[in-house]
Image (cartoon, rainbow over all chains, first blue to last red; front, side):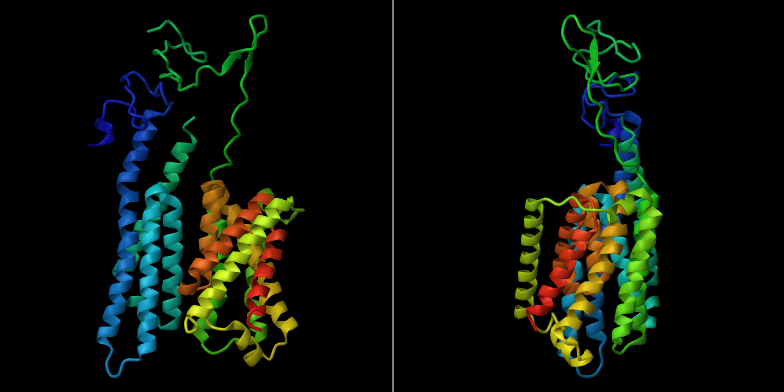
Length: 161
Length: 254
């Protein structure tokens, strides 16, 4: 159920009258609590799913690269690629878990990690820039929105009292 | 209604209300000292540091300026010369100094004299020793993943032990600490709070090294250095610990 439909404090669920702006039990400002809940349900939760999704994407593209390699396979290079992509999957899984509690810092780290890796790939092999360009742009946009939403949540929480 | 009214705006209060429903003021902040004396205000809570996007901006700019020369070397390929290695580091240090100045008082305070406590120093050194041991274990277990920096410094650059310590322990410790514990961490503190800022700065420090197998131990080292920066209020103890860490890793393989 949407928190806005619950007839009570959005933070502590104590009974609240419609004339009250603040919860008399926990002091929450009803309006900013509703805004926080809305941001958490839209921008922040979708960024979380994208963080996990990009980790899976690294593993899938590693397998695709190996499958499409022609000629004899360099086993050391293959193991390295698989090791790195699974390492990145684990890192993104941890960021995904962290984002549930603290979406803003997790989104900042995910964004910096993503841009650093893409820059590194781009200088090593410029043709990789265009691989999956749509997914890359979408990921950056979703994370930028999440950082903005996370900042807004912090601001609303900070101005609570 | 129990007949009580808000001490700030005078609106009637609900039974057992801690906060006024109309103005949000916390009730019961006025405590009577004793029957005769007047009421006394309770100590207000410590104010939050100003919530700032500017600090995040400074942190990210310093991070990417430190990343740029590494990308340049990747793009060029081949081995960097010793002078180029030092240049990479000094650029990070200069970016850090500019970031420190851009952060103003909060940043400049970090260049001052540290608050040192014996127990704090012992905890930090112990934790750093554990990370050194972890790196040693990992490099023994996976020699193909973690390359032997000491061998490489001797064979490629022909460095002696003292030269190796200067170029890969002392200079990087000064410049990376100016950048990460000098500018990035203080830049994030206003927005994220101390603990989270330490965690994020540690992760950025690890990501900067562009090596997936090193992410874990570099994050741990970054977290120790971040905690030292916040507790001591200065970057200099971080420089010492960072240089000691680098030197220990090199010395174990020399």
